[in-house]
Image (cartoon, rainbow, N blue to C red; front, top):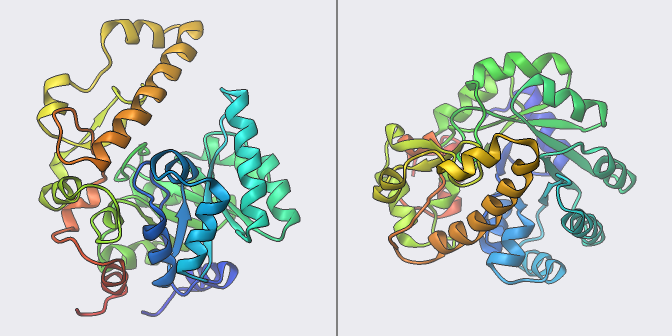
Length: 327
């Protein structure tokens, strides 16, 4: 596939073959999946909470295990919100370990990434930051990030509010490489993103429905079976909209928190307690739902790219089809 100038610049700066990032996913980013994406010529990105809490690796040992599976570049996700001092200290330690283990590409989310930029740039690495609107992206630009992950309204998990074209127009004036995140599962969609001016794409949902992903077969099959209209936004997981697959549990419980949580979320002092409770509950619930066979209380995160997914394939097959190869 012929790359645009922006896409070529991205692959050269990161050392990968193709402008395809395997998005960091809780709880779906198991080490074998991350390694397979990188080995296939993309950029697999470690989600450290998944690696440690879901898959049971100490971070350094997990990174070394991934390194035993591929010598191609890998990245790491850093959620940098500061609501918990203990978590912030742990993330600082994780970034130090990742740099010591040779990781030079980081995706930051949910905070001001200036301190991450300082650490990573000192080691010669790159930092891209998640953005859904220019007003949030400008804070990252002021922090010195190298690029932006433009999360649009077709993404799984915490989706943005704009479509890919509108979001490109929103962010293009900031002068940084942009990666389109959300709604990509086919060659035509990848090509369209690059033709808009994006330097690359980030995929999550498509890589869940692969043989290397360690989630349950029920979760993978739900992605294959789902259509675009089956993706709904629920606030019951984290208090803010999260894209999930509609199923009997989601229909039964509704899409908004109960009255007590809504009351807490509406007040400054109660919001922290409510968000903390929701975060802890969702960590457990998503971990259980992803790893086990179908259970009565399942939340399966996915984006609208499900519309282009009709089979469970190897990561290598997915990447080759994204590049336009006939398989």
